[in-house]
Image (tube, rainbow, N blue to C red; front, side, top):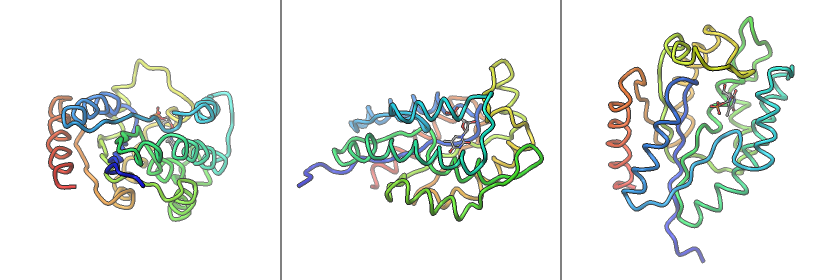
Length: 215
Ligand code: TMP
């Protein structure tokens, strides 16, 4: 019998350049202050299989069909759920995941002149729930920022295969995040990531502290 309370599963998501890594570190410190043990996962990644799939997906020299892309993200996530996330949650350890299924629903559904054959969002949610064996975040925090602003922040960084799709694609990604977010978890929070890092952290801290106390 499991005598531990289940851990909390929190996902932080948003387009690249919105400051996810910084906010994940802040959130990990907060959970530690609140006496909630936690581990951080990176999607895709966090397992040996996941890291190899991640390298394939981000390789700018590879042409990958959108459905292949979607299925590879799902396969990596399935490994992460079954060998890391489920076990920790059952032992009362909380998870902070850098992206989760919402990312696939958003990035792999969009069609524009740079990428065709977007996969319908309904299908991606269904396939994703199958791949994740029903595990989904309790809370999704979306860091929201116009694509143009996020790209400015990333200017000096080398872009991977998926980041190089341009501003119009990323702005559609941003809008789709906002419309699909309610389907990603029971609790959701949108934070304006154009604010200072401190203000974004303060907003997340206030929400999560209240949310954990109420859970
Ligand atoms: P990361 O740099 O935030 O780890 O994400 C790697 C890239 O992969 C990023 O450009 C977003 C993209 N991505 C998808 O296209 N679909 C997905 O399901 C995930 C998790 C990421």
